[in-house]
Length: 358
Image (tube, rainbow, N blue to C red; front, side):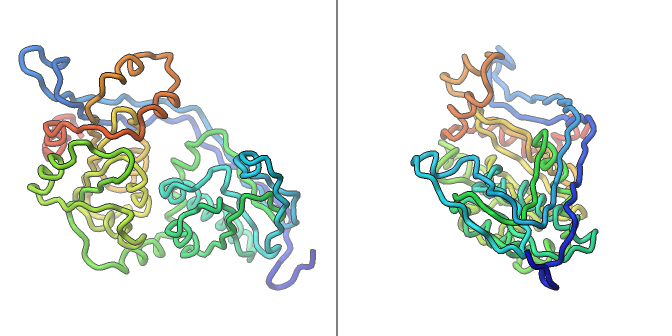
């Protein structure tokens, strides 16, 4: 390969990232009204989600300036259609990070995993004085909104199912907690650019209800919206907003009620010194996961979860400790579910966190 001013040579190198053992913060979850809480008068349940210990984890970024043998998408089109795809050669002046194994089709995965990782990789190049452009290899189905964000932060995009021949940045990790926990820190490297992006939008509501269409919807949505609108909340659907408007929502809001999902992804761009935000995250009982509780630790955000009403068919599996968690989530994660208005009202009580010493 010929190198020049636009394609400087460098020796391959590897960056190792280590995370020590750690313990999550405890979470607060409000459950629906039930006789399990009081046989005389049913009440909502307040559940303290205990801290969860995590073993040490590590990751590595390996940078190679030479064109490497084809990298194969782990979920390639040809495996589904039994048709081999020819390798594609990409611009050798660019260093390419193959994001397809992490499959950033989801807005949340793109913002909370792939973008921070790419920013971290670029910072390692800059720290060594290596002036080479970076690009991301993604699935062809990458959304236009996700692509616009990657390009805003200066990354080239190549969308392919095919095996790829190109200079590579290889990423390996022993646990997903590497990107999950360090992503907010890596994003601080581009904080000025993030803030400028959000400031490009004018005023946005101070109280926001982030709703969903299609999957994981609230079956008694009219009742929940009436409750929230009476308290001054405005309903928004993320897909109706530009990326800039979504970022601005989380920058300006004082209270957010949101159904768990990718609509919460822009939380990672909220400045650490932004005014206090109260976040109430509504979970389907088939998919309770305190992912965003980890992100908001550094963001001056009070987080409370509200769990929807379990359906009868969930109960046997829900109490089966031998149940595979992926199987449980696949069955129930995206189904419509009902929310107990009393549980949501309890979570909206501004005094509730004080009761639990938070």
